[in-house]
Length: 243
Image (cartoon, rainbow, N blue to C red; front, side, top):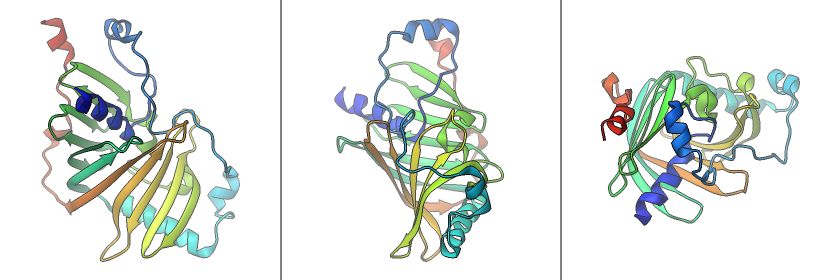
């Protein structure tokens, strides 16, 4: 039970806690459930602000920083299909593992290893958070999550995000960003290795209480054969009605 609860809290590391889409009876049933801590940092504040016009024009960044921003933007624009393994570490140092799949634009799937029975996936429009043990099936519009900026068909970090930090450390590009849309708060810090080729290695999300959740990727492989069915959620609503 403890492992399942820990995994459910950790899964929110890849989403923003925003208004959930679900039938009215489901919302009424869940209305009294407390909202768990938000590892994405929704509603949090920033210690640094970026002028919108200046950021778009690149006036706040030097030549080297603009080059790094361009490389990260290009990486996400050129990423079509990838798969691999992930390790997710929550603020209390609890770890959960699993497999992930990404198919641009906007589709992804995170399968968590047992004993967790959590599954999160996006069909490009809505993201589903399903807990097969607790029989919960929450839906969030993909555009209401902080990963909207990175999973667009046309990624443009300068246009769509406040870039709060960008630097290179030991052949690793570090870039922290916040969505420009005020409805999508949350801080994401990306780490991309430059060698042998540019590759996303991990990200850290920070919630409004300053708690971090780290997601590390391993065995990342490009592929061209991901089954579209991987990104279609099987509705649990009808399972509830039939019980």
